[in-house]
Length: 295
Image (cartoon, rainbow, N blue to C red):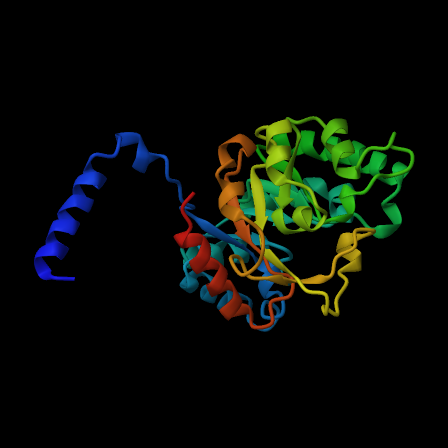
């Protein structure tokens, strides 16, 4: 291309850009504070708790979600988080802690600065009609106690919640939980990978239950008939031949999902990769993808 032609083309392109309506640029969104679920680096946390968190911050992450404190006190955790310029808006707590030690956990949450307490898992033995009913009752109770303390209670899904359960009138366990719990007390941390593996559409849930999903887990997956892991504990009866992947390296259309963030009520985006082989490299790949994503 000749210089004169190039200049003319550039001027024309600039004119088109300048002529765009003012709302065009404003309609584009980005994730301002990318977060990490520290389960992704769980192999490193017991080796060097403070150093691992420092590396997470150095990667660019602004928020972390805890999955255990590795024998550190709440004050110690808070000091490490603050030292690295991070916030820790959320934590995962086991069902047993929610059932038996919720008051103590609320105090821990206040000290560290958690605004959300999340139950991440229902044991396989409890994944029946009676078990889901007990879970709904407990979640309503825990959610009410949390709400009074200024903390939001949530439940985090895998894929097993998206199968019908005998005794729940043919409902999927996830749909049962959404209907049986008080939306004020119990919200959802949607794992965008596991719901997709189950063949369900996150956006359709945002539309049916607007504002119910303040937290999301962001991990990707790749269909792979040669995959050796079945992820049976996470998927239940859902058949899945594939492997987990860093965000942007798989098949999930995050741009489409995040375009509906306002409808879903998403406030925090936490990267997670259960199978990170090289944790610090993996979290960098996902961070770069999400930090650069526009939707």
